[in-house]
Length: 168
Image 1 (cartoon, one colour):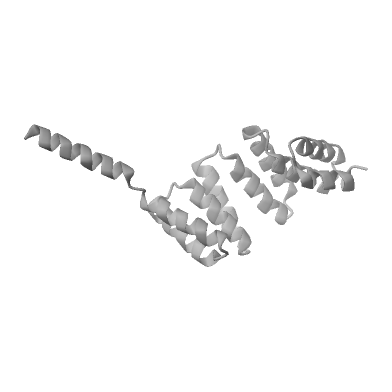
Image 2: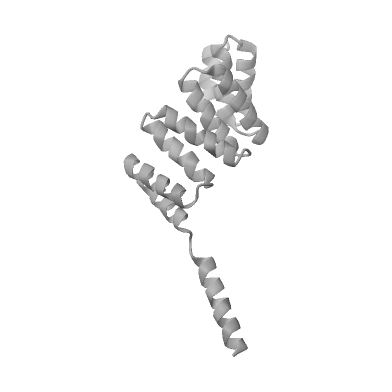
C-alpha cells in the first residue's frame, strides 16, 4: 500500500511540474497576437497573465512595448517602472525606459537609464547610441561622439549614421 501511495504522489508531482503556469499561457498568446499586429488582444492577454502572476517582469516589459506602439506613453512608463521594481537587474528595462524618456525629451533621464543599462550589459549598443543622441541634445558633443563610436564597435548601424551627422 505504501508503494502505491508513493507512486501516486510521484506521478502527481511530475504531472504538476510539467504543466505550464496559466500566466505563461497568456503570455505566449500575447506574444503571438503582438507579432500579428493585434495590439489590443496582446494588451488584454498580458494583463491577464499579470493577474495570475503579478511579479512577471517580462510580461510588464512586453506590455509596456505594446503600450508604446499604441501611444500610451504614461502607461508604458508605469509598466517599465514596475519591471525595474521587480527585477532591477534587467538592463533591457532601463533601455526601454530610456527610449520612452527620449520620446518625451527627458534627456537627463535617458542618460541615467542608459548608463544603468550599460553597467548591467556593456554590449548594449542601443543604450550607447541612445545615450549619444541624448548627449547631443544637451550639447555634450564629446560624450555623444564617444558613445556613437562605442555603439559602432558593438555593431550599431544607426550609430554610424549618427556619428556622420553629429561628429564632424
